[in-house]
Image (cartoon, rainbow over all chains, first blue to last red; front, side, top):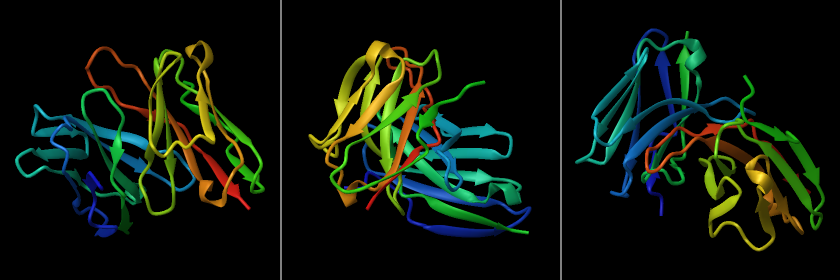
Length: 111
Length: 116
């Protein structure tokens, strides 16, 4: 049972444009959501998070939006840069417990 | 700044052998997690410790797997009688947790295990 789903395995975006990565979840106990970025042969790197009491969190070029009624969150990257090319994982947790990850979206930024 | 470190980075072993991995968390972090990642999948939870206490183990963690965190500092993950299906990236993460307030987990570079 996949409780966190990333339905787009890959995404290509022109440099300078907006990248939008999507994530859906099914477990209503999840109340904290995170995005991680992963380069090959490295561990995931924390990017940005959002608590279920908010619907938006922004950090520089990265913004995460949470729609609790739809059980959907998205990560916006503006403007996209070549260094953003990586695999992005959405993760969720109930309170301070373990993370449940999605399967990832490979983002390629085209120069 | 010393982040989460894992050793070894790569391990190749023959089926049936035992292997042990080590994780050193960020020094002030009280929580330590082990995850496993296979190709095309996200990390899957294996087990976690709060200080030296092992609080939860996944059903993925068969009796061939054992994890310890003596003295609440570094942790080891041992796999006995390795099988080819154990081939994966083993990731360690740590966090500083107080009560129910959620904190980010910071990951190490992983140990890639190949069982031949």
